[in-house]
Amino acid sequence: MAAAAGSGSGPGPSEEARLVLGGQGWPLGPDRGSGGRGYDSAPLEPPEPARLRRNTCYIVLAVLLNEKKEVLVMQEAKPECYGSWYLPAGRMEPRETVLQALRREVKEETGLLCQPLTLLAVEERGPGWIRFVFLARPTGGTLKTLQEADGESLQAQWWNRKTPALTLRARDILPLMELGLQYQACPGHPPVLPAELPCPWICQRLLLLFTGGNGSGGDLWVLLATAGAPHLPVAASGLSPSELGERLLVGVHRLLRRCLPAPCQASARVRGLLGVQHLGKEPGRSDGICFNVVATLEEAGRPPKASPPALQSPDFAWWKVEDAALRSKILQRLSQDAFVPVRS
Image (cartoon, rainbow, N blue to C red; front, side, top):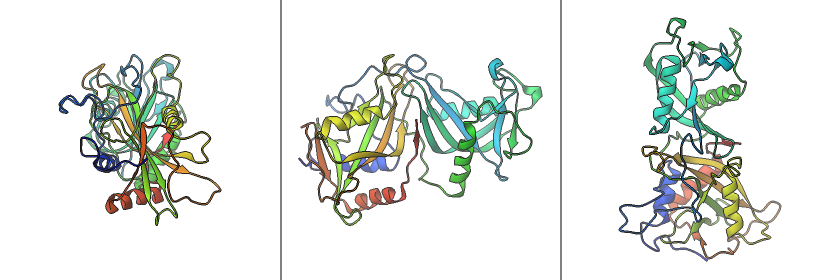
C-alpha cells in the first residue's frame, strides 16, 4: 500500500519529513489548533505521561573547548566524589528547557556563561536515565576559584587532558572530550539543538527509509502511519517500573515488528538521531522527549529490490518520495552517515 503525500488533512508528510530532517521537529501531542482533529501525531499506544524527577531523569553535560583545545572541567563538591574532577553536568529541573538546564549547570559549576553549539550524543539507560551531551563555547563570566567554592563545585579550570594529572570522578567523560574535539575539527553532522516543542511522552518518531534498486539512482520510500493524516510513525517508551530499564529503541523495534511481515528478510538499521523535541514548561504535561530517529531497511547479502516489502498492518503504508530536493537531501545524509549517535 502506498500513501499519497497530500492525502488526508494537514500538509502531508513532505513538510514533516523536511522539518524533521532539518532538526526542527514536528508537533506531537494534543493539537489545540486543529479544530478537534486530536493529535498532530501520537504513538499508536500512548503510555503514561513523562514526569520529570518522578518516572524519568534527564541529565545535561557540556564539553567546552578553548582556543588551545583545552577542555573545561570542574572539581566536585559532593561528599561521595569530593575533590575529583568531571565535565560540568547535572540534572534538569521541572519547567526548564534542555538548553536552559545546560547554561545553568555550566554557570553554577564553572562560573562561565556558554553558548550551546550542537548536540554531540545522547546516552541512555532506558527512559529513566537520559543524558544529553553538548558541545558549547564560553561567552563570558570568570572561572570559579576555590574562594568561591559552594555546594555545586569547588573550582573550575581549563585542562589539556595531560598535565596536571587529575583524579577523575569517572572515565566515561574521556571519549566525550574526544567527540567534542573531533566535531570541532570535522563536524560529523549538521548542528543540532533541541526543538522547543511540547511532548507528553518519551517517544521516538521514526524516519524509516527504503532505497530501491542501486540506492542513489533508485526510488526512495518512507514508512508512514495512516491514522488520520499520513505522518511519520511514533513509538513510545513505557514508564512503568518494569519498563524503565528497557532501552529507548525497543519501542522502534516493536513498531517494526507490528508493520513488517514475519519472517521478513529485511532488517532495520538505526542510523542515529536527526534531533530531539522538548519544552518542559508544564510539569506533568510536557515533560516528555521526542527523539527523531533515522533507520534504513536493509537486506544483507541479497540483490537490491526495486520496491519495499509489503506491510502486514493497515495502520502503515509506504510513501514514495517524488520531491527531488527532499529525496536528494535524505540520500546525502545517508551517504555521509551524518546523524547524532545514540549510546546505550
